[in-house]
Image 1: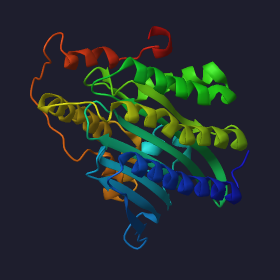
Image 2 (image 1 turned 90 degrees about the vertical axis):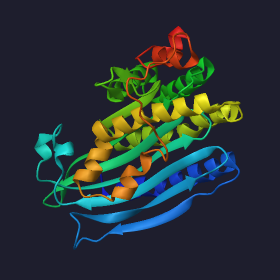
Image 3 (image 1 turned 60 degrees about the vertical axis):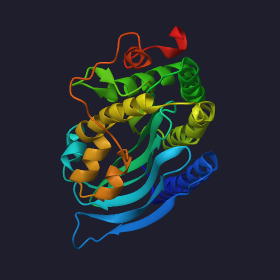
Image 4 (image 1 turned 45 degrees about the vertical axis):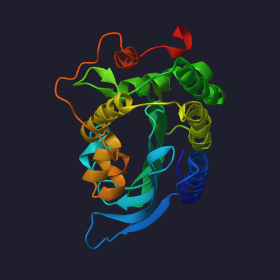
Length: 311
């Protein structure tokens, strides 16, 4: 099935609205800070890509130390290596991509960091669409995990998969998330997972509906966790551990993340691409948590697990 221009415009309109709705919900949750808005465009005379976007960042809030969510609609005449590595038949094709991506870094160490993105991609050759697909997902990165939060996160993910293959869809995209968000050099997952999918291009109507389910389901999955944990007392020990574990988040985004690599290799806007990085982070050589401590407990959560069966 082809992806017509009208189809692309429908996706674009949905994503613009999704960004606005998530910003409004996070501002209401934070209660103190508001999102700034940075409208940007790429100059085709000085850049290999054209188009633009809207990057929105909330800083120094009561709940969120930094929350960034970006919308982009960009195009180029040649795909970068990060894209053609797994789709070599598209080498030399022109492309257009539209998407929303977010990363929220809460202030309280007991509130998990989270990431979500939903995107649509189209490749063309000689004016004809030769490939199109959807991708996206969401994942959760706690530093002090709570079983109730992990269960809620995955139950919400499973429920939104129900109209699209049910348990089999959830299991496949949950497994893909575990495999993708894995720090090979550390031998650990980035967090407790969620959903991840890419190259979904079988039926436009059905696949677009799934994209919307994932985009709309993010707030249902995340906001109840924030509400439960945002007022949990913490001290300097917990804060320092949060900053240390944020370093692992940076490692993944700069070493493995395909979206980051695609953006940088294609000539995207650097500030918006690196919006996902935390405002404060620290590294410590040879750090080992004290045996039996709450910090040591995290290790058992940083591996693929069937959360809905085990907890």
